[in-house]
Image (cartoon, rainbow, N blue to C red; front, top):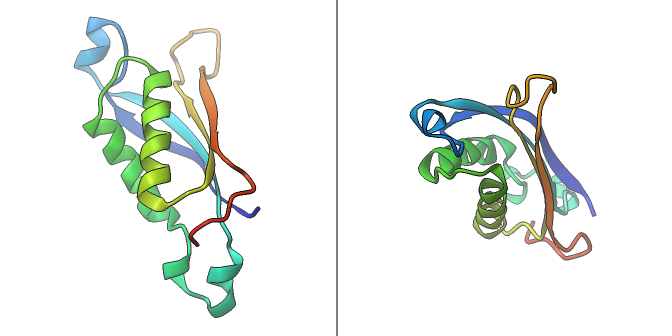
Length: 123
């Protein structure tokens, strides 16, 4: 399976369990790999048959800001479901990092994988 990816997408959103976190925007860093048949787009150089990573990047930030939650685990699950449904993605791997959340670590976060890697994509 081919993959389309976005690495290091930095977004600002409200996330966190503590009251003070609900009052501010924090940085999340998103890495996303999506299963897709890129040959169909490449055949005739057609944007319409791609996964438009620019559009998906905007959708990720909008989704995070429209669906505020306490946990990045919750955000990851909901975002994965949204992306798979909205873009007909058969498989994805999504990592959400929260830099600065633990002072001794560069970042902390979650990584989830959903769908079937060998499934046929709409692309």
